[in-house]
Image 1 (cartoon, rainbow over the protein chains, first blue to last red):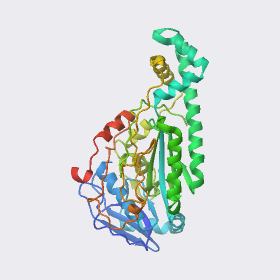
Image 2 (tube, chains in turn cyan, purple):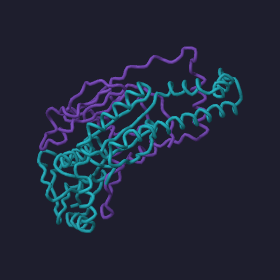
Image 3 (cartoon, rainbow over the protein chains, first blue to last red):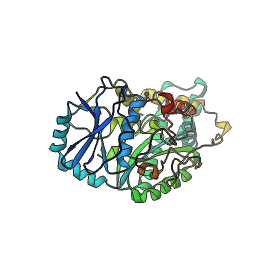
Image 4 (spheres, rainbow over the protein chains, first blue to last red):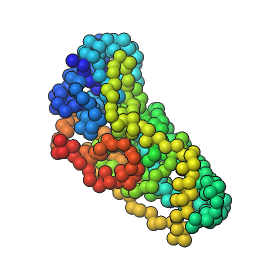
Length: 237
Length: 155
């Protein structure tokens, strides 16, 4: 029977797992597969797996549980192995690498920061600050102007917006960098122009979140910063 | 790294365990081992594609132009909306209700993460969103947040 693999941790880690359950409709029980100094948390793989809230939650809760006791290498959602032996072989094959990574991640957690801006406010600022944009905007209002003018306006605005968000991204990242041990750019999405994860020492979590709060105060309500953490180090494995 | 900012519903309240914010971490990051097989997940590809909207396109330019044209500049800056951001205290388990500028999302109690053997059912309020493609932008997000669900109760 194929097994679903949640995470790799140290064989010394002995978390309580009987009150959690695995992914899939059957909510299988969790167990561990140990090989040398490493241990994988697995369950029977469900027949069918979809990324349902229940399943993402189950996957994530295993990471959180392990993280509460030890360093953890969270697997990406949806990974299965043919059987326990395949898991053991995989642990054995890269044992040194995984152990090193676990050591590096010990005492550290991930924080994910996303930022978005209110579009209307942003556009107003762009219009206010550029004569060229203002001129083109006036010319194309109410269906006026040419197609080329509308295109030129849009391109100018897009460039301005991009420049502002790039500089904001740089500013935010630079402000938080001193409080973190590593960072991982997650790539912008349609909602968030900034999406970056930081690896933060547990002893510096307060410092890190304070820095983030300061940023939020500085930018005010026009920029929305969403901070999530402490999280298992998904972005740093 | 430039994307189109969507129309924003602006108000965002982060819950203690809002899965939505970490969806892409769970799905797109994390360790991958070659010897293992990734189950094909319907909808996941959609989510990824949808998440990357490039700014440099004619459609985008025209949309920006249209948005600018529509703005009532005489009305001036609109009054800033109140953001009810929730930042959990780092030292208090599951704390919420601390309003703070525009920093939203949830800084989960670190003590919470340390607690071994905590159960998911009691005292743990999880606001979660459907892992759906993010087609709907911030407005959609806001809708999700208006009706938080506790998965334990639901399932």
